[in-house]
Image (cartoon, rainbow, N blue to C red):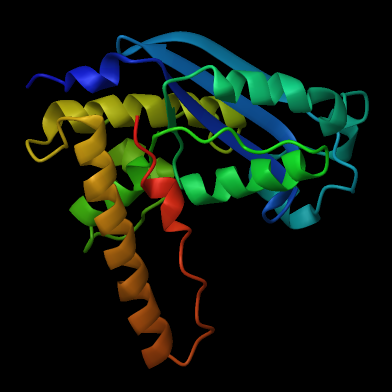
Length: 221
């Protein structure tokens, strides 16, 4: 099956590991794809301004000792910004999380996250595997037969996410065939998934989740 031509553009897949939930980066990973081929992997450890939470360390295995001699985000902010701004399309697995992490960090130094048309493979994986257990990147990679060594390290995860995107596009007849169609479908899926989760929270008397920022799912080229 032919992969849609729009995926031949420069696609930057990114991932972050953090010192605490949603904030304070301790590792970034960027994987640049062009013509559906991995051109470059770029990763860096970053020293956060707070100690790494033990719960976070248990997941990504990055300790305060690992980052004690690394630069703080203040020194890396423009470097990250320029890489993010260099791509035609952004991609991340659970895009909302990593985008918010970058937004929080950039805001401290007067920068805004460089918004691009984006693809979140998790949204499509959740749609196509709604009734299967496990929606993490490791689950998606296993489902599509993609080797995933070193999970929860930023560059490993970003490269696997890129490979997952192209595997989905190559094997699903219902994968969108243009950037704008993808954004349209993706926007509808994220709304449907939010409403499903909202209904669950209401029935289970759980905390009502904040709605997604849909504007990030509507950026046209």
